[in-house]
Image 1: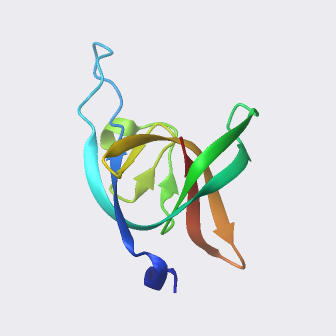
Image 2: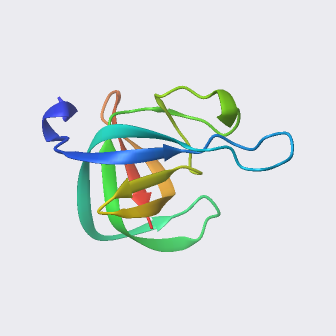
Length: 111
């Protein structure tokens, strides 16, 4: 059902973690269908601070990960990833699961 509304394409720049020398590994870019909604959204980030996001990106559900970045699959997302659209990289401030009876989509608020 959500697929009919995903009219935009964004690039999810997936963080791959660090190597043995603590140098960042090259991120992997994945093209994702999404719906970009512009507006002013007041949200509470992971640290509990109230912040303002100017964009919400809605996409199909993905598995949220917090570790194991170097071996991650294409259907995962992390708050350390970046979302690229309109020619700019946007940091993820919050990942919210939109649901009614099941998880239907993710609302991702970006800076």
